[in-house]
Image (cartoon, rainbow, N blue to C red; front, side):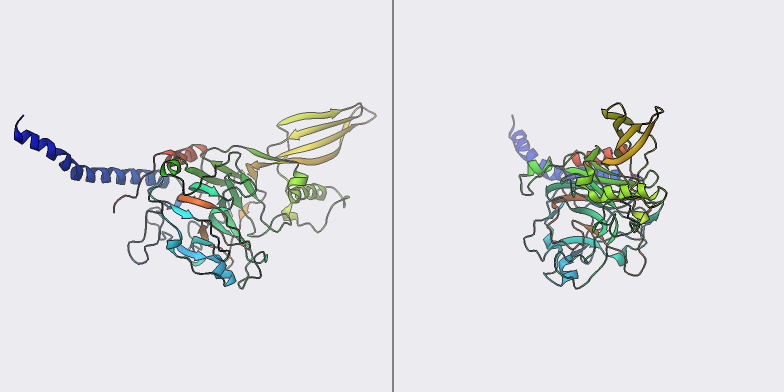
Length: 433
């Protein structure tokens, strides 16, 4: 073999490095574009933050990908709601959201376990920059979906949405800026079912069924694992979950989805587990009887009854039977009702008692036909990512977030499966600009 040939063999690997580098970068950019296109080409997408796209100048804030000709790309500010409403703690900056350097779309931000109770940072679009915009989904005849790709380290609270819970409950002491609830829609990491995908909507921005909190929420049957945010790269890369919520105004169904699956969940023994919902069901049925019934509260707001359709049971289970009495558990789509019947002298059976035994949490039946509609007078909340404004000083969700998308319709199972597949694909690094 000639000297020239040997020299060429030794040079080829050196030449390959600069030649392959642009190719690898090009492939990464193409993968990024394809994944973003998967989200943006899903009908109804009005905003998608991938934590890669930023303002080209100025503060270089994260911005959303939006439909062509949209006027607002929703740059995200950093804020600390404890400082804003209680006057305590320090300002938040982008430095408070460490970057992972990779993710389903090329980047991810970390929501940390903040030990300082006066510091609860989040990213947000202020109300004045979103009012009446495509993400301000409100009013009658409106559906909504929120999708978040995340690795949950701990917690069960908010991921993203317009869900200002108010600062009037004094859990963290009297606020300097007192505001009522301004809830519209949001996706949570479980709430009462930690780790599930929890959808939340509100018709009035405030409380439900006489409770201090909003109670219209769904919880997926599946639960996301808790993965420490500082685990090795290979563990984190295999731990991405796709949380989603859909609200379909036509069916009144609010559904939580985890990794494209809307696994069902029921709450048994509802009278003890969620007494306010049990009471709202009872009050609604008593109200529709003639005259004031024993146990009926005439002051209970009629718009806060909870009476899902119970026209025809999907199944009936006999719990007990005797000569003159029979007890059945009748299951409907959203409720399970214990029905007691007695046999009359003529042989006919008459219902003597009905009681709510269980309520379906996924999907959840939303009893209203409209999402909270703020006016222009400051009664609307911001769109927030990572946390929401509320009276509690709880840490909330912690972990990594690799993408947030909002849609103005209820996505299908097939669409959510396709979006979930992005999170299961190999994570990528940010494309070169």
